[in-house]
Image (cartoon, rainbow, N blue to C red):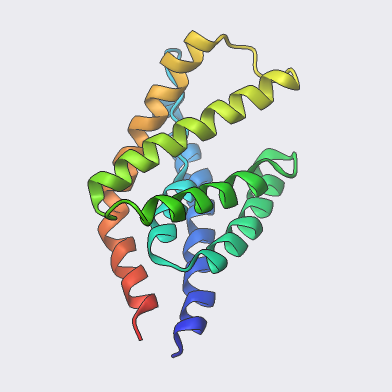
Length: 173
């Protein structure tokens, strides 16, 4: 199978599965993830996108980011444009960072924490502007951002090697 065909099939399929698993994880483990003192939000689509952005060509990933962002917005958010713009921006940033950093697990953990923090802050700011968010910044940091970063860092550690092997298999000649 040609490299381009493998990229066009397996990357969107994996990202689509990650998109669905975001909702499944949140639904199945809702009692553990959404408590009175914390909200852990799985961002598996972002974690997978960041990993793939380090190993797959940027032009493919930006296209997939736009399409999956549109799908994520329409399925989970209801406001088109938030993830449609965030996912390609994260892919672009990851592509720029991979040129100066060695893509290993520790670097990807730091980049994921940085990009998830940026994403959560942008989402919080957007929701504050349109009057959907009702919590203050300190509550957001303590109850939402910290637990979300912890959960997604654990997901990254668990998925790094299988997704890296998949990306290597997809991009080999």
